[in-house]
Image 1 (spheres, rainbow, N blue to C red):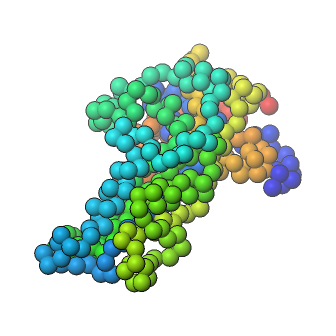
Image 2 (cartoon, rainbow, N blue to C red):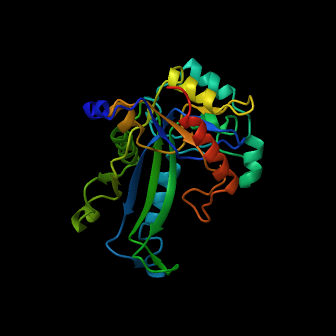
Image 3 (cartoon, helix red, strand yellow):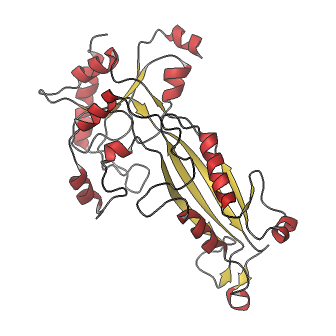
Length: 302
C-alpha cells in the first residue's frame, strides 16, 4: 500500500470527524482509537423453562452473564481483565504537555450530560481518551419473545465494545477476554453455538466471538504538520485544542502506515451532537464556523 501512497503525491491526509472540544475551540487530533466488538453469550438449558416449575433448579444465564460482566470492570471503571493494559504505549512528554494546556471542562460536561460523578473521577476526559475502554452496548436473553415472560431463558448475551489505544492488538485483547471467561470456570466456544452434548457436559458454557476489530494509530505532535495546522487554526490569538487521541475510530492506520501519508484530524461538529444516539444533530453555528476553518486549512503553507 505504501507504493500506492507515493503515487497519490499527497503531503498529508486530514480527516473531518468527531466532536470539537467542549470548550468550543477548534480541535486537532493526532490519532484515533482502534476498536473491537465482542459478543459474549452464556448458555444453560436447551430451551426456556417455566420459572415456577424450574426456578431454583434451572441455572439463570442472565444472572451468570451479569456476574461475568461485573468481574471484568470495577465500580470505578477500571478494567479487571488480566493484562488488559499491559501493552499500552505511554504518552510522550509533548503529548502530555498538550493535554495540560487544554481548558478544564469537567464541571461543564457533568452539567450538560447530567452526570453526578464520572468513571475514574480523579482524571480528566482528555486524558482518559488515551486509555482503552470496555463498555457493554446491549444485553438480551431468551427466545426472542417481546416483553418479560415467566420463563427462565436458555441463554443470555451481551455486546461488548473495546476501544483500543496505541500498542493494543484487537486479536490479543479479544483473547484476553476469552481467557478471563475461562478463568471464571467456563468452557468457551469461539466458532459455534454449543451442541446438546456440550450443554449436558459442561456446567458453565459460553461463546465469545468478535468482528475482528481495528488497531489504533497516532502521529507525532512535534512535526511540521502539527505546527502548520495549529497556526492555521489559531483564531484571534487563541490556539486550538490539540488531542493526542480522538475517542472514536477512523482509518488512520490505513493512511499513515498503509499509504505512508501522515494523517491528522480536525473536529468540526458540536460536542453535544448525540453521535450514534437519538436526535443526532449539528448546530448551525458549527456549520458556519467549519466553513471558515476549512478555508484556513486550504490556504495554510505546505
